[in-house]
Image (cartoon, rainbow, N blue to C red):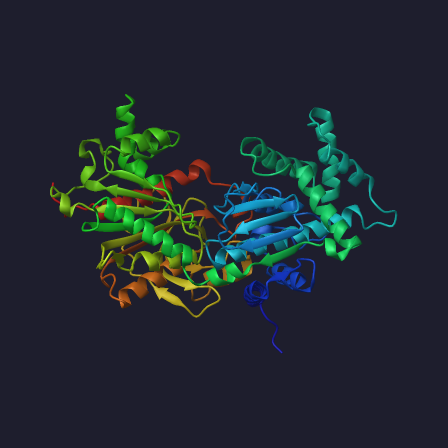
Length: 564
């Protein structure tokens, strides 16, 4: 029998993880340290995701992966023995603490010190994301337990010292802190510097945003949880899926509420008869490009000649830009439906044309009724992209009649992992290949490489739409890149958006010739060591590609066919 290649094994591992996750959701509960949880862990270890680094090495605890997970899970998750995944619950009248992770837009509630409820509003992708993180944490917790407790002479002296620091009431500093980190590094199987780097990362977040516990507390709590589990099985962590979650999955509940609310807002602003251009992007770049120069002038400040220098100038002036923009056709539509997707609505007929930056090549219609309306929707999460776009592109049932919006273009600007390049590069999709399914979509992309400046490397080719950023490994990605697929990058939403767009064309909601644009800026390269998502944010390196894509989207929307 022919032996499977590493990339084939990786694809099997992803498929196995997905099937197990789907079945556990239907089953209603599982224990991460039980048989089902062990199967999930086996598939995750077989996959060996790049973002989880040395997870498969039983001798050392994976610290960069730990940082990534802690930043995206609610504070106190390390204490829990009961984690409940549910659809939206009404906790307003309770004393439960509401918790939002630092780097994930998901709402959780601390029911008690050992029980947490995670509210799922963004579909299956969110479930896969959470289960992957829980599985990773349990793998690392078992390593900690093995290192601290599974010795002939019982508990190690390093663990006794960690316990003193973790549960102590006073903050430690200076020489005592150095000694505590050194002691912790022995438990973790890491160097002092590696442990110190993770300690500093988590400590900064703990002090600035109160989004997590200290590294000492996290390691102590996950080790003690496994210890309690070993002494009595009923103490083990259990993950529950409520019936309301089953009813929500696949039914667009939150997407439908979100789309209805947004359409109503557009009609309330009397913009329903105007040409509409949809952009999926962040909440700042389009707004700052259009209103940044005016806001600076309004404050008596000089506007930099370079567009990207201007963007840097207004990064920390959000309130000032929003105040100015509000006088010139800008409306911030905050999502209250639970979908966690805010929207910027921009009426270009209200723009002060004299205050547009000289590097932005825009022409405007004189007639207000022909002036475009831009609807910028915040980033969706995985399969949620299909739900919200499918619902938004459908006609709006207003009272006793239907309103069919004149949607003239859809532009998707996303973050993605690049395969042939580096952080900060730009990728243009010619197709979306849906991982783990037979669904592939050709994209007639209105972007071309010639649209972009020479200062940024631009790649064109198929994009791989993946189940989750935590479910990838080098061998599989290299296979998609070097084989006849010739994939240039990976992301989570593009294929889902295109599926909704194709469906809307078939249903007659939008014309087949409508302009579609997909451009991604590289937030990481999972094939290069030190350039995975776990290596940290892009910082200022992301400004030029983000604003360059936004600039070209605007120039294509407000093109030279308009009246001067």
